[in-house]
Length: 374
Image 1: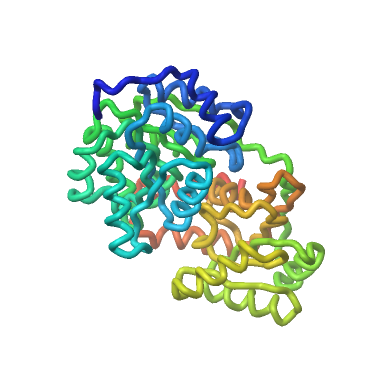
Image 2: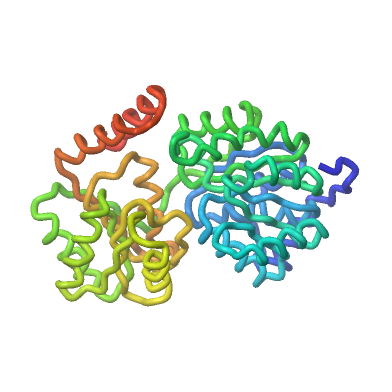
């Protein structure tokens, strides 16, 4: 970090909020997070979906000048954020695997000339020695780690680079880091703080209440009939149906289609082209039902999702919260309905035991599942 770089008055955050983003006032928690960052302190922010987490680092990025690094797990999420910032007149870029080499080279050139204010990177691209060496020569003033619960919940077998993010505080000493998530229980929060900040961070927790989402749970009787009855009560509205397996996802989408519902499937076993095509239809057309595994969802910001239906028990309370959080982002009334059966618990326990993870990680996962069941 360029230690001699002038720090602008934190009052300028109000002007940037209004002039760049068009908001008159901060939402609860935003100003406190920004003040801490502008004072050079690390922050862990837990805010409900729709509470404006992104502004917590986007406004300070423009106040501080220089470059802000944003670590994000999904290409689609990065591209959406960059497009939104550019619409607001902010110089933002992403370098990722979905772009061709010339586009990535041009983006990096804008970073090195000081034109780019926010650079979005996946942890896999950031935590390479080549990228870290290159960034050491750039004036980085702020680092934001989005979807920070992944540091704790995604085991080293899945996204090992998320664990490596703990190196950032040593590689970029003096640079404030903000970790953001919509869902983190006390164990997860302390885990993130320990790994990313060595325990030295301000923690801001704004609660998890989404009062516009009505929650309901029912024992699975005839799952397909229960689902169809529910979906037909919301005819013409967009919804997400979560299934435990890829096979069940395909079968459920086909069942809804045969029943006259516009339904699409989404899971990690499909080709990228098929997934992208279905996601685009869901995002742009009204009344489409997306039947998906948990591969679908993080960063999906479709405001008018009227419901989320779980055909199976989610993995834990945080996963459940994250998944139902895709409903009702426009503030309108929405529903979250879950079916469960005795076999679900056995299946979830088996999933945890089969993970390539430490015994401690498995113990915590069983504990989280227990909380959900309770």
